[in-house]
Image (tube, rainbow, N blue to C red; front, side, top):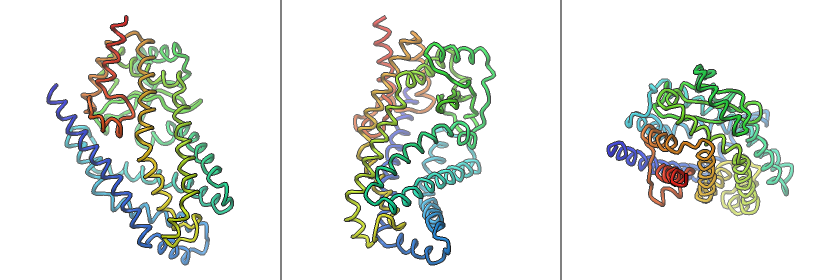
Amino acid sequence: MGGCEDNARVYALIKYRLSIIDIVYLVGLLAVFAGSGISKILSRGIDGLCPQKFFIFPVYLLIAYTAYAILDFPLNFYRSFILEHQFGLSNEKFGGWFKDQCKAGIIAYIISLVLFLVFYGLVRHYPENWWLFVSAIWIFFSLGLAKLIPIVIIPLFFKYKRLTDESLRQRVMALAHKMGVAILDVFEIDLSRKTTKANAAFVGLGRTRRVLLADTLKDKYTPDEIEAILAHEFAHYRLKHLWKLIAMNSLVTLATFFLIFKSSGYFLKVLGIPSLGDIAAFPLVLLYFIVFAAITQPFENYISRILEKNADLMALRVTGRADAFISMMDKLSAQNLADRNPSRLAKIFFFDHPPIDERIALARSIEIEK
């Protein structure tokens, strides 16, 4: 156990450092992109070559994304391929990993293109109220995306099928019914093709709502332990945590756009960009989001940890199996190399769930109450 915990701590420390490096590196690249005039040169060059003005931003975004993918490749390759193999957490070969990276890049490009075409259109047509309209559309878009994730995006990376273990399937369906959660069905996802980590998820909205069980979890955990995991996921639904998180993220989005609306004029003047509606201002908008997200992250993590604790409490009380919850947490932390007891600073900045040791202590306190 000690060796596993040592590995988990080393792995976690590397991940923390890489997260900080990622943010600093991206901020630096965007600052150079905007401050050196490269963004302005690129947008003006595309404008001169594109007879159809509609295509200026799609071409600009494609070039910018491709340049970032190339510049970020060494760091991304180490973080998501070398490091995962080094700690025995990945089963993927380079070809499969690279294919997934390309898919993720294309999806990110399409989503960003849609969102920023809306952004630029509204900034130009509603100079005084655009921040309200853009925020509303981005929020509704994220809700629509949540419905599409299980039926469009996940199948691009994994294969999944209806759970063949009928006894376990019926048990999950009964738990969902007991907790008042309507689900389409229970599916098994082939996570083992890519990783040794285990996971389970309750995804989708409305009619697309479904349970996904990783084969790495289904084959190594007892039915009681799987029930403990899913009771936690169903508790989020019962306690309306999704809508609370959507409300919190919506406020952050609204605050970010309002901040851009009120303060971007100064930075645009420094950069020599005539207006926010100019495509050359794209890196400046991204900088606002990245810096503001970094500032608000501790608060968002704090709120999320409270919601996760409440979901744990409901799951423990519904199932009445604190022992299964504890053994599941022990297994999951060892399998995923989780940092069971992080430093206070790491917890504040990197943990949107309570650390494993805290969750186990909660379960033990519930068991004592009984």
